[in-house]
Length: 136
Image (cartoon, rainbow, N blue to C red; front, side):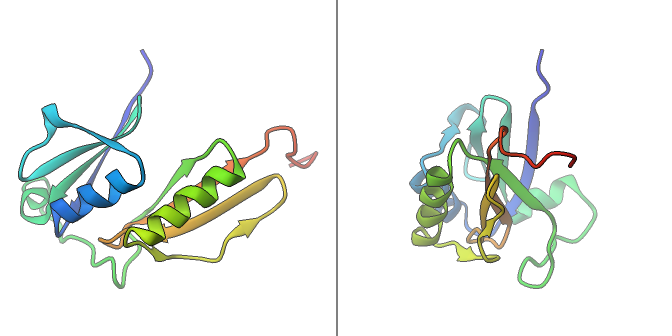
C-alpha cells in the first residue's frame, strides 16, 4: 500500500476556499466534507482537509499562523509540463490567489508560486528528468 499524505489547513471562508480549488479543476470527497471541513483531492495519495478556523483549533493548542506575516509552510505540487504550471498558476491568480515569488526557470526545472485566498503558499513545479545537470 502506498503512503498517502493528508494536510490540514485552516481557512477563514470555507465556501470561498472550495470555489477557489474547484476553479483550478480539483474535486472534493464529499464523504468527508461538511459545513466545517472540505476534503480537497489533489491526487490519489494527496488530500488536503480545509478546516474552518474554529474547527482547526480543535486539533491543536497552538495559535493559527497569521499567513499575512508568517510562512507556515510551502506546499509544492508537480505538474506534467511547463504549460500546465502556467495554466494552473494563471487560473489560481484569476481565481483570487496572489503572486508569491517570481517564476523560477532553470531550464530543466520551472516553477511558479502563489498564495491562496487564505495566504497558504503553493508552488507549481515541472522538472525534466532527462535535463537534470550532471553531477548534481
